[in-house]
Length: 159
Length: 159
DNA sequence: ACCCAGTTGCGAATAAGTTGCAAGTACTTG
DNA sequence: CAAGTACTTGCAACTTATTCGCAACTGGGT
Image 1 (cartoon, each protein chain N blue to C red):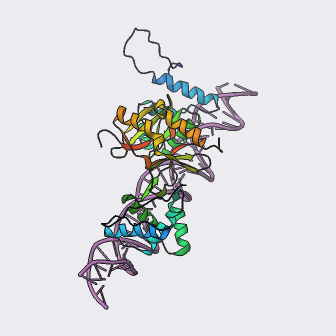
Image 2: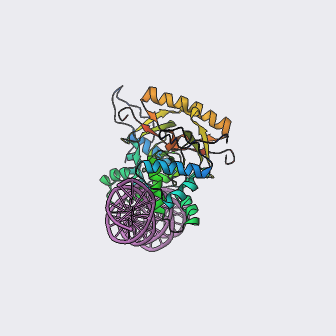
Image 3: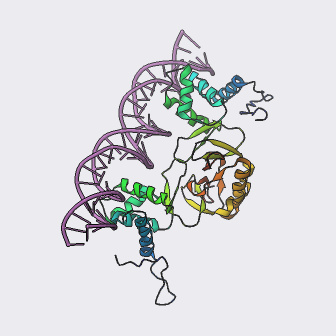
């Protein structure tokens, strides 16, 4: 894959809608992995490709996407890679009650609103948690981790 | 803790029956169950007894407590009763990431802070969520359900 | 006391992950 | 560019938390 190793995709052909810089991002992440002694494998590349799709993904979904290109990639491999990527803080894992965990590339830290009825997940900026965070800290000495959980409730449509 | 929480308002038609200590509370709840066509069984009484202990309990723990008195009560029975009690809004079920759900008697609605390190669960008054709740509603039309989730993070000791 | 819907015990099933291990392979080094 | 050695993978079996099917049991209204 002759991808370019930079995240910033500078277009030489003017201000246009261009192909998303997915290859570049994947290569960057793989470079990070290699720096830590990891390897840039085919499966890993495909898993990252799936994660680049916007939204929150369950492990099964990621595996399904990956298998379109490489049918032999095992679900276990997907899980192991997601664990690794989470350790490297490249992806965030979000739990919604006891449903399967969802994963997404870590970019801006944000909270999640998960509809109990239709299952949709909406993002909420970190600032929305400022008050809560402060109360937890000052009154309980508790440091909140934003990206590991989703707040259940009912979305606008399902009320 | 200040004062006695009035767990169940069994105001059938007369004046509200003030619940004596624990037995009274259990009887009140069982009365509610009977009104709905349910039965006051031995297992049910013991499960409620376990739930009356303050704190948040996992199903296994409740079963263990119950079995000290009635060794034959099956874990399945505990789960089924907890489901039923949750439907009746007598208990709240709280999820902490993918760990076992915890249950507690529904009294005052409150949020939860769950330490990722030591597993302890702390309560947070509903008011702490006011800002968050409002932002979720005004900006996303999203209605937050407080009692079904816990916010992960690190407690004062584990930081 | 009787009856029957509500409950229970038990075994088996499920869903979502995790783990052990041998085979495979990406990189570093020579 | 061949070799060695970690790092990875595929697969099967296991685990944990919870649910289901079903026959046996039982609380409590009549």
